Image (cartoon, rainbow, N blue to C red; front, side, top):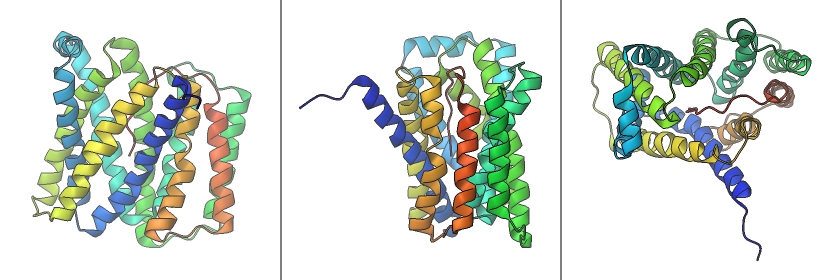
Length: 305
């Protein structure tokens, strides 16, 4: 029997990570049905994930030394990344899922890849190619097909507004992440631990002030624990491991599988049916995002929902 090559193993591991990240959307929906306050849900998840990653990181002498070597300016840019990506982006994703079906929010959040390409033109001097501009147009066409005719009740309209804030925050955090990785030479896990700790701490503080400290059931704690330990800390570590073998282009394409995985999981476990028109819209949007991603972006680590 022919053994699995390192490249094939890395592809399978990356697909496992995208599957775990996709299940997060379903588990968050379950948690919200258990009446876990949205902001506290996000804060507890990333707070516990930070503790797990911190314990692992400080046990590695090079990583421990890198944390001690950060200067004041490094901490400022890491704090900015943490506030935008963890405090704002993750909060808006959970709040968005409170008001929107997972399939709809998934389509909205995927626009971040398109927005990054456009913003990169002005902020990072990364000029998009013709195929990328075509991808932007294809994505917008897919979104139009998905939502046509536009008719959103009040709660869904609020959810779309929250989702668009999340899209902007996620795009800005992507650009910040590249800027941080260019400036700070530490390993991706060290950058993530530092930024996650700051962002999750602020998010938890805001959640306690806004929502209080409720009593959570055992089921709620199990959901938070699984999302923190498995879907965040473990999945992030495994994803970083795959980046040692896969190119940035391969990782981007594999990450795009979530556009298909989330609707399937939402249909199976949440009963969120997708019409033929919506399915065509999702397919067009996914192809558009793929076209945007078909260039060799610098390798970078990323934690998804």
